Length: 149
Length: 149
DNA sequence: CTTGACCCTATAGTCACTTCAGGGTCGATG
DNA sequence: CATCGACCCTGAAGTGACTATAGGGTCAAG
Image (tube, rainbow over all chains, first blue to last red):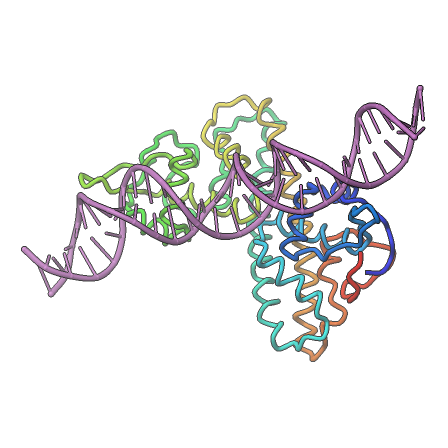
């Protein structure tokens, strides 16, 4: 960990949108390395912790489980690993990412359409949010009010 | 819920990649409406449950909390809501979606680059996975082996 | 009728945080 | 120097979102 930044745990939390308890939790489960301490036993963080924690929070925000986050961090932490071991992991994650992108794009498109509709005085009656992320059935409007499946 | 499909809970689970306990859980917390039952008290699901559950699972997979999922389902369930109330919600969600897409695209780009590197006999030494989802510092390689922050 | 697969409800466990409890440290202020 | 509020510490308990387990019922094929 190179450059010094000397952040307290509270400051790191504010910078990364993370609760201090969560930061301690991540340290406990070794997602984050133990930081330096002051004479008064306060944790002291620098740039690399900021980067690492930001990465972790964003991966979590994107729905990746900690297990996947850990695997990616291991990748980054071990630059000398043979490509053979890494290849499958990278490709798996790549497919997962591409799948999530495709879903998000469909959802974005529908939300954009709804936003535009609202601005131009439309109604929600032809909302197709559910369909944007689900298989297309042979019948049915998403907004059907019957409830019997 | 219009078209009949007559799926058992197990079949619905297989179709949507969801555990039966999770499906019961979602019914309990009213994310999924109660389905019809057989004379033997077995749940019977149709197309609309398939669609709704698929939507829920994908939203969860994309990292949206159940609270957000519920808000979106409410949108879809109430086609006659005034656009005024809905507008802010749609725009908020839209921004969230766009942010997630941007993050995923950066991660995809880095993973693609690594995959290509592995195929062409490269090394992991210049892996920049962490940087793909974190703020760019003034120094530092992601793979620095020092651990003091 | 038997049997294995699946269903039911209720409860407890797991993962990933998040809150609470009790006490210590820090720096500004009087 | 003493006070005080903000923040830090560790450890334990709580919450949300599932997931597994327990005990018993249903179903359909043989």
